[in-house]
Length: 326
Image (tube, rainbow, N blue to C red):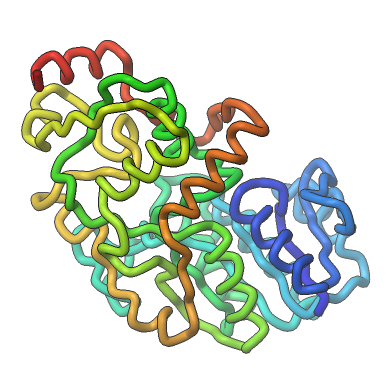
């Protein structure tokens, strides 16, 4: 099987490349720096924002499958998909569950936000939806994968890496909300594996690619971090009302956590019937955490991305919350 990965050097794209190589597939990546995630990968160099450069890099090549993870201007995803017409048989775009209208997401049939395929900018949800529409304009039978919270090795967002690094330091650690709060996520490697299986099987249309809600909990994630790091950290549970009153920001300052109810009702409770029927298999949270810690120890601190907010609880706010909880 011949696979083209648009990007292929960071987190999701990197996992897709690694999985494809493990299958013995012939892998090509196209990115600005012409960089390969690993040996055995053919690389093409082109600035995705330059449509002529993309067409020149593609040349007369053809592939069986293509995977795109673009999260910038929808226009770029749209023009790249158009350039690949006649060069690939099947197309997969890695979108996000963020494309669903806020507070209305249940499954793949839920209402979607508006998005423009030729837009130059916009909020994350509209950008991802616009890119979906742009891909579908050229490939109506495209596979649209909509993951939620993605964790695992090579995560460059800083969610699980922050928790692991903080817990590794030991001492009292603010643990947010209710210990049994269900946590819904997908390991990046399980996402990549399912995506390539689905592409090879000729699947199309939207799939919410997330593990079952409640497969683990906030406590399950944090205790797995303690076990992986061998830390003496002690979890100090702070209720969601106290967190919000102190100004702690869900999701960013407290990665992978949001309050229950209110505007966040149902946020980590997507239906997974469709994707499970399509063969999604998820590894346990303990493996995701342990493998991410092993990667962090090997490569060191993760530099913050300039296109995402910095994740983690500021030390001063942490001290305030811990003092109030004692």
